[in-house]
Amino acid sequence: MEKTAQGWDEASTFFGAYMNKDGFTGRFCKDALNQTIGLDKPSGSIRVLDNAAGTGALTFNAVHQLSQIKEVTSFMINACDFSPKMIEKLDIIKKENNVNNIETAVMDGQNLIFSDKTFDYTYSIFGLIFFPDINRGFNEMFRVLKNGGRTAVTSWAVDAPLLCSLYEAYKQTTGTEYTDSRTVLTLSDPEDFKKHLEQAGFVEVQVNRVVHNFELDSIPMILDGFKSNPFFLSVTCKLTSEQLPKFTENLTKLLQSKNTSTTGKVCLPSAAFVGSGKRP
Ligand SMILES: C[S@@+](CC[C@H](N)C(=O)[O-])C[C@H]1O[C@@H](n2cnc3c(N)ncnc32)[C@H](O)[C@@H]1O
Image (tube, rainbow, N blue to C red; front, side, top):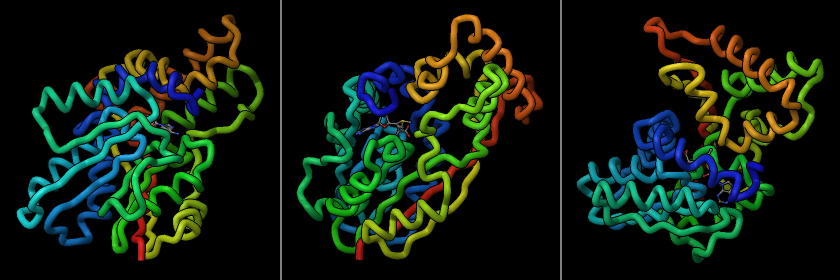
């Protein structure tokens, strides 16, 4: 499900509402930008790729960051995703905010249509981890980067509360481990993540663990939002209709035990890795 565009189309409304510039994934985008653009003194005309852009959390943060650098005279962000609905939502946000320097396209992130050495920076924020062939994803991110350009990719850590609770709730409900592929945890081993970046040809490789709070008003609101998310659906579709209410109860209790909010809302400190490298 998480490997198909239709699977992600369904999640586009939730992403447009909560995974935006200053939303949850937007916080990891700021880390990715700091670990790349933040190390350079970019100047002149800059071209950026947001691969598997969703509704544009990285794209709109890159617009903001590049606009602040007076040495950057112009810039263009290419935001691509294989889900037409994600791109549709990104286009609406772009129009609402009257931003001109974003070009969007529906595209498979493993087969980019761009020429070699087009971009100064390439990113994939919790996107490449879902590609059926992640090595091809890394190779494409490298191929389209100019010499001296930098890339950043993010992945989840195994202790990210939503993910570990999802698999634990499955186990508590069914009495067995969830044995299918845990695609959402691809690159959750930082050493393996580093090797993938190095194998693609990147140098100055860093993989840093970062933690940001996932905040929403209530646990039912989180579960409602994630019921359209394909990685969540790939687990719940294995449950019978009799098991589903028990699963929801187990998951709710697990998330409540990880909730650090003192205001009656929900706050889940969530760990991820930001991997970056430079094309020599
Ligand atoms: C978890 S969302 C992340 C979206 C966005 N980068 C963010 O951080 O909010 C994963 C995104 O990857 C996209 N995606 C997954 N596989 C893809 C592929 N093979 N090619 C292009 N996009 C892909 C999905 O459509 C979805 O928008």
